[in-house]
Length: 153
Ligand SMILES: Cc1cc2nc3c(=O)[nH]c(=O)nc-3n(C[C@H](O)[C@H](O)[C@H](O)COP(=O)(O)O)c2cc1C
Image (tube, rainbow, N blue to C red; front, side):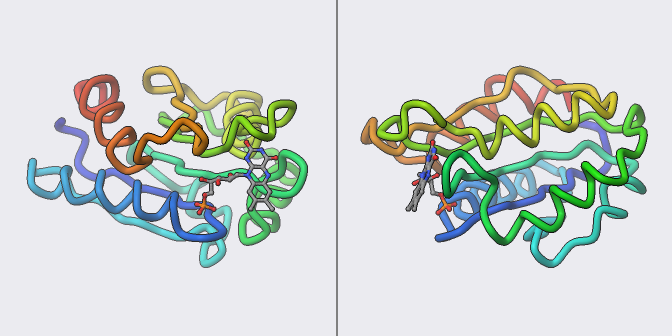
């Protein structure tokens, strides 16, 4: 991990995505990678447009396959502005629940589709946590991050 800093953007409703993000940040900080965790409802899209570090997006899913309410403004503004994000490398950890089978983890998928359409580059494969499978999202997130993402930062 020699990329300077990891920007972690969190889109959550009840805090699960934030817990996962915090565990990843703790691991990074113990392994000499600085992180900034920002909850997306406190962020302007400029943070992404001007980012010169890799980005990790942790987003859950609400409504009928939507990004969380707190992330709607950010998502819609990014879509409307459609900036070129070809300078951005990003990883994505999505949260959902297979009980919502037709819209499983669409919040994270929407972010991923939007960033791809704006020419951002994925770091590794996104992971989508299923709240109905009994696993702990923060454990799964850390395992995914350490096995698949950290070496590519
Ligand atoms: C009202 C409501 C609607 C939801 N809609 C979906 C959905 O459409 N698709 C999905 O995969 N998960 C859906 N979920 C599940 C959440 O995304 C999942 O529980 C997630 O872990 C919550 O993370 P958070 O605490 O960070 O918001 C929904 C949950 C609630 C309570």
